[in-house]
Image (cartoon, rainbow, N blue to C red; front, side, top):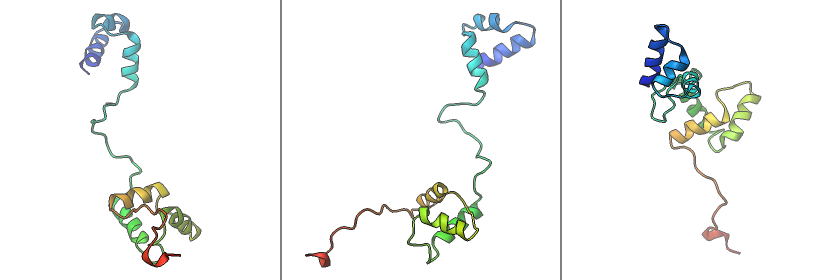
Length: 120
């Protein structure tokens, strides 16, 4: 945003904020909103990864646990509490789901379809 830079330069040279905003035809309230939101809020903006993002090793550990025979048939909603009962915390339930979805291991489990052997 070029306007922010111009206004900052004007203020550094001694101009007051309100007249500087009027000069570039920006409402003072708009300036304050832009100044408060220093980050780029466009959806396409490049942002740094969150500080609490799991490392690749931690993500692999989640996958390894989920693919162990005792947990392979369970959803994350049951895996996470069972691990917690054993004193192990790897990630939240939603993070488990995100990791499994990213690796194509989440499947919708609806009601079973009537099969050939289930006729009455």
